[in-house]
Image (cartoon, rainbow, N blue to C red; front, side):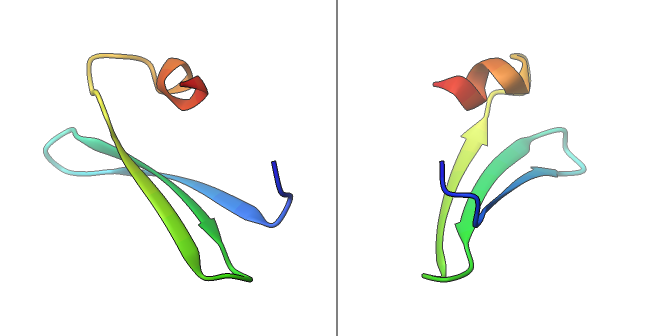
Length: 46
């Protein structure tokens, strides 16, 4: 993985979560909604 990529976990008031991978150099961003009933680490690996 590129060391320039930032990983953010966004938690919303309703309990839902969003995993965001962003690259400042290219200004590209990838977002994935996470299942609130499953662990973040397990979903991050898939």
